[in-house]
Picture (cartoon, rainbow, N blue to C red):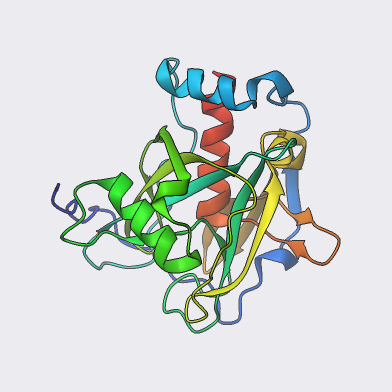
Length: 237
């Protein structure tokens, strides 16, 4: 297993203010001028082909500005595409009690264990521990480029196909809710919002992809939105 990367040399910026709510920061721009990923590219067969023969492309977002000087830690997340007639992406809402990214929308995943042989093993183990998604029901397609978070996690997103109808068992200590968002919604930049905020003399920028599922508005932002943006770029390359 690779060693954790060394700390990034730049000085960390100040943390966001207490009780910060990203939903209250105005939208600076929406990318409705960019083309969506075509429906015929979102089928299981098309997704398998894309990862089997990936295009030449560059991720758009690879590193957030650090809030901390702690040693970076390796992590991995699973990007589970559920194969309904209209495919969806399975996401979680993290509990408020977690020490990092509490209450945020996230992919199942977490820190790499010393016994994990690679990022795929980490993503599968964490998905099973967090939501009860058995590895036997997961078809791994491939990985997206690593994404470095502001909290110093070096995250590998692992994209996979999941059959619908699987019974999940969320871990109540880590997961407040599990839900699904249509893949075509996430791969349409008309739903990609840019936010800009000034705080303590520094400019913060991030993406969001708010989704109203009829019960809640799921505010997908930060690292999860950044990794989804990279997935969009991969699919459009």
